[in-house]
Length: 207
View (cartoon, rainbow, N blue to C red):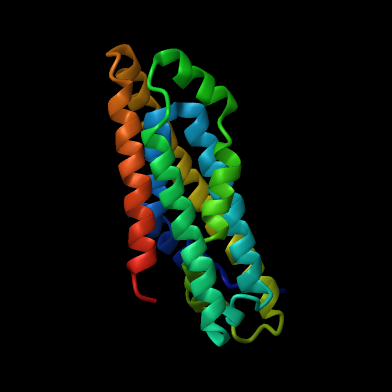
């Protein structure tokens, strides 16, 4: 049977929940999107990031993530591409319209899912993390290691998506309150700062 043992599965779920409880750059991106554009945009962003992470999990399961270790230049190219994209989104937020009607239109027409997926895909650290994290919960006596990694990768992405969606709903509540107080410009500028900060941190962080 290709599945890990039940004890390993329980440990894996507990580890995933612990990781989800610690906000990271993806959560900051989702919350900033929710505060600036509303609940729907934040939820779509969380779904897009989940799709990007799913691709990373597939890469880890089929050994593609190991190429990032063998070819550091590819890793750096993807890393800087992702950082540049985040900085671009941050700068664009500073020039977005800040009235309530514009925000409502943005929530309906926002390319948040696509942007979330790109943010997830252009973060090679996720693939390297999964490459190191997932094998800790596999059964070494089972020959179908790739299938175990695939199951675990799907589980990791699903738990992460649930946590990100919870943050998205929280951000949507904050956005609704700002909208009632007619203070939408604050959310727009905060989003721009967060996007840019995450991008700069990604570019400068070693590894």
